[in-house]
Length: 590
Image (tube, rainbow, N blue to C red; front, side, top):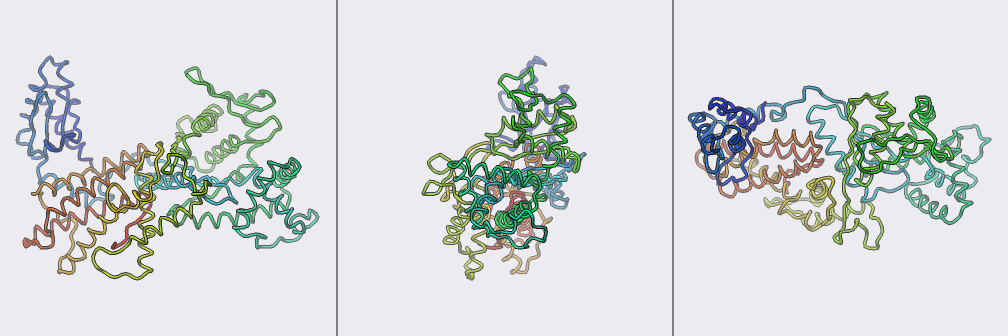
């Protein structure tokens, strides 16, 4: 199904051509003066110089060509040369009927469906999720859902930090506390216990303790490095302990991500490509891509067109140890061999942009990816407190993510109550509060352009008024309440029973609905969930204006009432599709 702007532009372009002008001048946009018209074309202004004619005359000639066109109720040339357009009610109604009956509201699927890997999440095992992990999870999950909605094959990979010195530190501290554990007897050849010798709470306390000791005690750090070496060399007991660390950590991570409605297809980590690194390094050396610089192995990635310094991409440190660069490049190699993606998108803090520029250039220079493979860095800004600095606890520490979610849940629980007078059990109230709280958090984040920093304002985000998640959910709940009451009156919902618009608010709502295809296409192409938020807010506003000016359920004309009900049902479906793409859902009532 063609976007409504494309259909309008096609008609206006044909009118420009019929009037003797370049058809390309007929590109139409949504009006920036909705009080004057619904759509506008400024092509006459652009064509004035080429045709040596006043733009108002050109616009007038084009308007004349559009006279009698069934698409337009108004095609008017206005000074200094704008073409103002309004659609006929019949055309708009028929467009929405087609949209309603079409799969995915008529969104055109891409000619080439791509395989795309989205790398997001990126937590370290044995550490609790904190607020710094929120944006990657929320943005990455939404981008994944948007791309899937548009027909692409999308694979979400959490890319765990599960290798390196942090693992050696944990093992060393465990040995200090429980030296008699069978895992440290390197002569042991039997089966290791199935249950871990620690809980997730103990594990989360062990790492910071070990990290602090290593900074103060060189001998302790040396033992941790030795433990890391043994782990990576395959010592059985150390690998068995590492498996316990991973199992306990991943189980806890899944529980917390589930609360955010975030799901990963792959739970791979740095460890998965450890054995690939020697072969990759040998390849880079043999092909002449990598060379030594001050003892380290590097690949030069600077280009002649660079206006700023781009350092070489380090592959191995002077002591032969690998780095994050090494792991990320080996991960790219593995994905290309196993998944063959057309694109890889990395949802990471925007402060990592230079790092990923180095990695991407190195991957291309060393031919780890095909020339046509797209590598995209989707950098996000920081989530700040009301003081404008990164969000902290009252004590000044980094807040755990589950603490933040719990706080929002409590706020919403205190505010939750149904607007239709229906009594709810405490369990229902708590369930609804959790849904609204998640909407508050996710919408509050996603309504901002990803690259921008933003203030996490609990009061603002949890408000049921203004540009917030709860406002969107209250709008959906309002529609559902009307639909339920209509059915209680004996009405039968028919979402295709749309009517030609009469009132201003009704047509405004229909025009907003008609913009869905263009919005979702732009959100996909630009990996921009904030475009969905902006669309939903405008749509919800249009719905509420229509609701306040229209007595829907008391309307005596049953055909008119049925048409309005169809319009409301379509609006609810579009809004619920949008919130699903953002990663949250709406309760049946609030």
